[in-house]
Image (cartoon, rainbow, N blue to C red; front, side):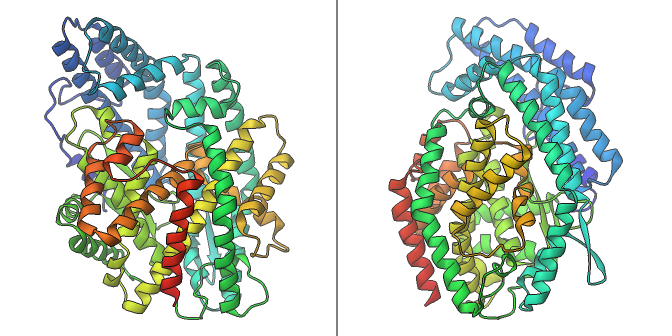
Length: 578
């Protein structure tokens, strides 16, 4: 992607505006407030008028959300640009605090009007349920606190985006350093790993202080809303109607019983294949047989075209959607200095188009990441027809099914980048990654439960809790001797803990759903893809279990479903290793 401002200026609304004026300035506080007040003051005297009132609000919500998304995207693409950082900061500090109370009043009015002019209980079930939960949770004095929290999240991005390492005569971003972990020269891997870890540790006090500020503010938000702890508040804020903290803890226990032993077996095989005395943290990504690291592309353009070829082979409709996104310039994929870490897909809600952000450096994981984020993009496209903005956003547990399924269904397509042997290697690594991810999800989620169940903890308490959980879910093979400090602060890398607390169990739930789709895909590719698209097309218009059901899978992350799925994954992994 070139100039993002130019790219976004060329986007047009999916549907012509009928409520907002074409020249509405959605970064001007007074103008935005006036639009909300106009909607609040409108007379509504029938079901039909109520439905139109809801559509007009949806138009406003989508346009305002897109304005904020563009500012966020431009900030993350250049965290070192003070103008872009300031523009996003202004939106957080000026627009959001004004909008939140107005949105609350709109939710209250919606519920009151529904009492007078009852809406279709099936069509609007989820929307009304969401509005009720938002009304119950809203506390006006939390608005300025939430603004502080958002600004601290931006600070986390800025600290991470500024991290570079001088390594072998060149300044490199931390994502770029990941390439060295794939090198066969073990001493080179170790130097790269230590250099990257040392750079992160330089900012450990910043991260510790940042988190302490966040946890205090979050506890205050929860207490203001009448909750005993932030965990319970956040579950309601995420509108987790279909599972509870105890279900998450059952997942943790199932992972210990069923997944950690598989992870241990994989690590022991790696130790044996590498013929080394101890498996160290820098030994986990390299090929265990000393083969050259998989290198799917040298140039990001090759990544874009290769993934496009995978979609052409997979499904014509998905291929067309990918080409549309590519043609509109809605990709920023290469790693560079000043860019925020990680990858994401952000929906531009008025245009109803997806944007993908990545830090590609030419490694195998980059292909999987683009497949993953493209799955999110397909979700945005396939539910774009729904006129209600609220229904064009699915629960995150199902959003991640969209992305993780695409990683798995794209496995055969890895031959686009590799010969048969290299593609086999890539798929072995991916299945190992699935098992590791499920264990890592349990580690991070269990840690977050501990953090907020023990709100008065000290930094030392926190360190001890992390080390204990990292040991419980780690498999016990990797030797961290002499690296106690690096291990103690590994959690600083997990941006979810700082930016979107308790948003991580979704990856575990979704991975199990994606594995179910993958099972069907191997037997019936066209049927699985049809189910996949059917589920995604519903957006967030139905409750979570119904979305899973529409995709032909079960909403279940208990031991009963994890066991058979892990047997299947392990057999597939063994088959590829023969």
